[in-house]
Length: 321
Image (cartoon, rainbow, N blue to C red; front, side, top):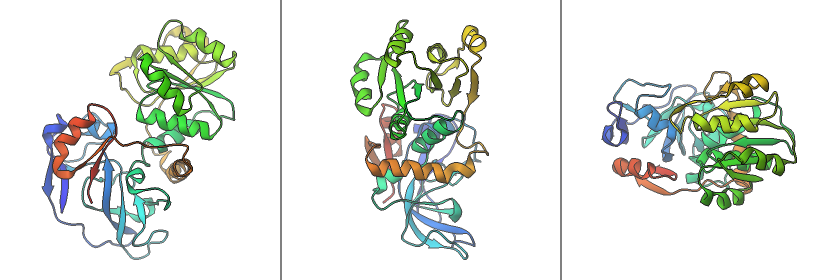
């Protein structure tokens, strides 16, 4: 069967190659074989391929952090999933192959109203969004949160799920032409990083507290968020899109007594919460309140082109049908 192997760390476009490998063995007790349909290329996949992620499989190895497919066979004792179900693939099962062998208890059966392409994108960005909104402070309707990189894929999920929960969202972008698009997604206030931004947000919120700040950029953008947060608020770093260390002004950190957190969705304490998180995310997607747009889909043989397209922005899927 066809699969995509990472052959060396560094330069994903050069070191990811389609290969022919043996099909998985028949499933043992508690296992299932899934015929993959689609698998996204995610930011974390390229971090792994570059050798700077928290997972470093022995090479050559199939990689791929999420995807969806059809259960082809189940092993003895498997309950809750059956042949023919469309499922998402759990953490620690790499997805960039025509078939995978996975622990059945980690498979999430996708609601019939969600198509295969959308299903393949449920496990990382929407699920991360649910966990980020749940894990640091108990939010209630009309509370305010702030996030940067508001045009990113995960920020779109955060906005959709936050609005589903009746939260108010401040989105920060770097370019003014992005403002109308992010407002259309449902953000209550969208602003461009600037010295005046904090004052504009005070006016937009009516002085209400902003208790959760979600940083995906680092650098000075982190300081923009801490300047907006209220005393005792929680600042969470969950990505480093900007490539620079976080800058946290002492006046905010000490004077506001901010709570500072690092987040990775695969910390051990979050793994038992994954199923509930992906279930909520799927419910929001099925309701139409959150869409997961796709830029392009490529066959496994086009992995180099797929990586190059991903690096120009947008959501790219690998098509294993």
